[in-house]
Image (cartoon, rainbow, N blue to C red; front, side, top):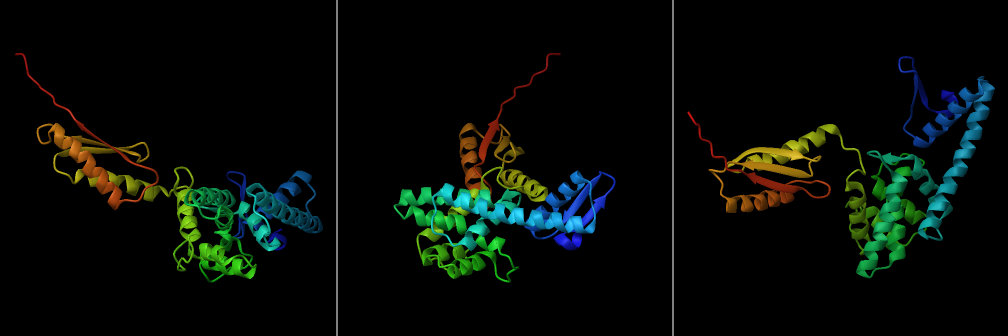
Length: 285
């Protein structure tokens, strides 16, 4: 099975699981489907394994082309080279930080078209560039170049227009931007990746961000306690009533918001709430 699929198979008895390990997501999918069919069928011997793997590989290849064609039809993009259509289909099996690459590329294509329409730029070119911007991630061979530059070279090879090639190469600032479509694609790529829920954040970096947010507000005089709540989308700042007046608390929330905006990176927006309460305590003896 490993020889036929090129995927390492690890059988783990404890949770009754089989792990498939390989760098190529398409190969992993072929191995998964083949294994599923063999186990369901019950007839497992070398000749049968090869037969099932070959059949599954053919099925996946057809599905990849089908997905690519369906995506271009849905987005109204015409005249793409068959090899580029196949690569678009391959995006379905690839993900980046837990965000599906095909879903991400479709989002970027639609956002680019919307933004281009607002600015009075060619929407069809913007949509095409948005869809193809990550094409370098799904190449058949492992390139030495960064994915944006490699994607640009692939687009040039398949006779895409210069402004589309430049938008692909420049979306991570590795190539200088030469057309207005390039910044649009770069911005829409960032919007799609940074929207809340799009990508899995590594727990450590997430906790670090919340701590940074709390410490930033604590650095101001008069601040007693800070709490980052709602997954870091709101910051509650508690100030001492004897140190900070009502007018100063208004100014403080503005200053903290400005500092967060200037010094931190975060998806969406952060609401800063400053709480100042006055307590009068007396004892009856």
